[in-house]
Image (cartoon, rainbow, N blue to C red; front, top):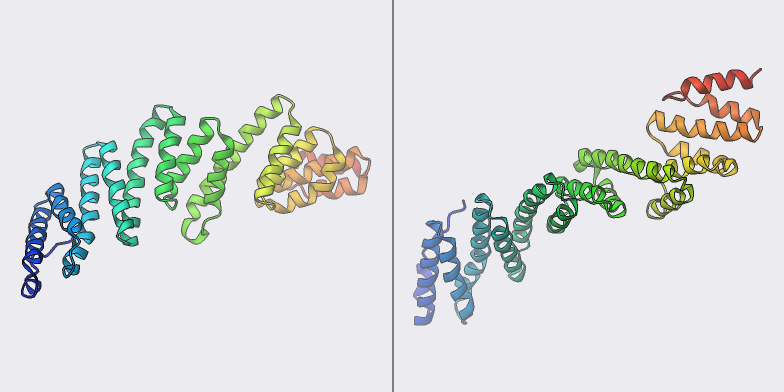
Amino acid sequence: MKKLFVLIAALTATMSLSAQDLSTLFNEGASAYQNKDFSGAAAKFESIIAQDSEGVDEVTAKAKQYLPICYQNMGQMAAAKKDFDGAIAQLTKAAELAEQFGDESRVSKVNNVLSKVYQVQGGTAYNNKDYAKAAEIFAKGYAANPRNTEMALNLAMSYCESGNYVKGMEVYESIAAMNPDKYGEAIAKAQEMMKLYTNNQVAKMQAANDFDGIIKMADEMLEKNPTSALALSVRLQAYAGKKDYDKVIELGEAAAEAQIDPEDKSQMYYLSGVAYNAKEMKPQAIAAFKKVTAGPNAEGAKVAVAELSK
């Protein structure tokens, strides 16, 4: 813990009696701080700040510097005792005071701790399968520190598990848009989970033969990110499910080009091959099937090429 030097003797020679009293208050607060009596220290520092007397700017400035730290320490102590509500209250006050006093560095540090407290508290709700409650808690932690990618992933998953697919995707997309050099692992996880939950969502809609609903969902995704490989894939598969082969042919190449995974790319070419074949466009069908090099449709594509080449 950073040491707080208690004496401000150099100031007292030129200060009024009131200023001397405030210096005494500061030293008492500093002593309490060193003894880890953060509540007592906070009370002393608050008294100094409340006076806001002229001629004691240095004493008041130091009180303002250490008051948020006192509340931060009280919050951390409460969190260690698993008093999460108490910890959140103290840390929130610490962040508010630091912001009020213009200490942006302290605001960031406090919010980082606050987000971790919300993360633990939300984890309890998640483990109890109360996903809506978990999302509510994680959302507060995410607001405190959006760069806490573990928190963000927890929030997105809670939204999806509670049935709020749209909000879950919004958070996953925010993670995916972060700096890949710094957050590469989190981005990869977000993309993996986006694919999983989107496929789950699509499967439900396919079971209901709601291909138009799938296309609408994909179009909404593409409005936010026109190059989304996942959305392009979902949309193409929905048109294939509708047997709208003209649309599959129109959109197939772009969907295939957007895919990074060889199996996903092959799937797009396979759907295009099926569409060309259905439209009796043999040369185009052969060309598309020849590009199917990976995944479960690779052998079927070879067979199709052989049959169409006779």
